Length: 333
Image 1 (cartoon, rainbow, N blue to C red):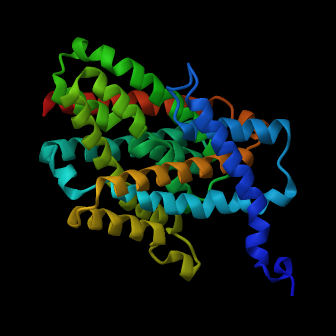
Image 2 (image 1 turned 90 degrees about the vertical axis):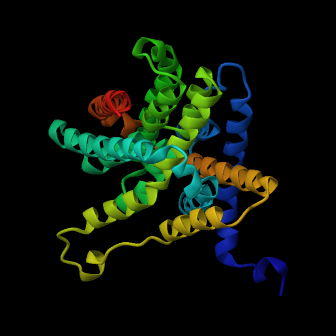
């Protein structure tokens, strides 16, 4: 029997798509090093590159299986690996008041965004994606949330683009506003960590105002990331509420959520060498980037345009709300 015939057909079918996704990912990392594009993470550039390729050249039919694999399996595994960036000790480092500010801001922002989305007529699933991206951790939260909300790929792409836009505005603008609001480094770090969307954006804004501000912002942001798992479970319960399907009505417990929590616990109890930590962090980022590249490859620009301005206005309103709400808490506590 020949080697070609003995190969697993399933594995053979996904390789063309995985190779295409990997090529888009390499383009994104290369573009990230160019002047003027360093403000954007490789994940965001991968979405743009994927959309461009798909809508200009078209996605080959034989690559679709591998693209779907990258979008689902790789993304789930990457989210699990994000747990290695967190420990319970880091959460304790900002104190009970800091954790309270982060938790209150997250919950209030999510509820505000979903409610406003319903009032202005934004699709419920898209509103949930925007709410998760704004309140928790940007693109990673959008991807994780979509596993239980099961929104269209175009909705995911729209949400990532909107969250990236306003997160970038926050990263550039918040440090300039710190003196105006009379924030010291600790207070500014809490504000940035509790309100800016992406981890990289938080780090970029935080360290512009000093080392203490940067460290506080990073810990506050990672505390938000730890709340990703309970939020995904809660959304799964909401999605199944009122369902007549007995199996669908069972409380969801996606394997990646359980694994994420287990990894955070492991990382809190076991000392892992820094080199291993760095390698895991890089692997997580690469797989997240590949997953988002796969989403871009399946996005249809005409579908994005059909959504109109309402979802963008929702993302803008959520951005203003989370900034104002968290700032008020930082000033009061």
